[in-house]
Length: 349
Image (cartoon, rainbow, N blue to C red; front, side, top):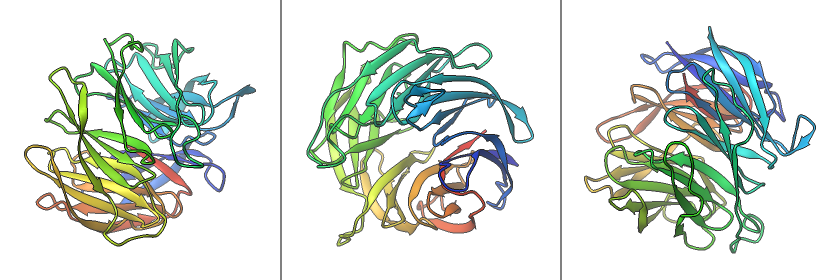
């Protein structure tokens, strides 16, 4: 059995972070329980050794201060967590986290605040006071979603030498040099995304110098090539994640690349589907179809450790598990549960 951690929004029935057992033989989720109470722990991140878990408090008030917060926990076994640290972001709605390779720095992006905040992590896995902050500026053409910066994702590049961020509000993807200890905010490389696209999340190819970006507002997947220094060259491919002829309201959310680098998956909230793209030997994409997400508003995806299963957090209905056909990438739903209300993030421990 694998340990599955579930982040949630707590404005309805959920109370915090949940744990569960995942059976990699059958694809079933069992023994779901509340691991720790928390307010809107909508994004989770587990350390590589599985001993520490980090979460956002995606709010606008945290310990009596304006903005949200970040939380750190020790994984204590049997699906339980022990609180060991909490720090304010001083920016509204922190929504995404990334860790440095040595687990000494935690990066947090804030959607409404338009910030990146950097926190040191102690040897015991405790989040400490802010050590650096980057405030972004900009806007784009969408009348309601792009009046200001909306930093939606932060990710460390595969070579660990660059920090990537998506700004949904200004239609930009930022890359900054990172030496393992500090981010050089004076040397950005910026990819300008077509106006109104709203870049949301990033996934990297496991072996090729390519980044894939899913855009929330336009429902597209972008292919970005990297140069020999690991910096983006530009957009080389731009494909819709929705079926041809679909004209109803929908927004993309999650993006994942299979461990073998053969398939890419992106979720459509509204169409309530998972788009499948085949990746060729050069990293280019070809759309191969759409599969039901099993529920409504598919916000996040997670592969099981063996890559045989793709789990989908449908925020409005529950969690669904799909069997992955590794030869053609096709998905077959085998299990679903509505036991956890408003699931927003899935992470294996």
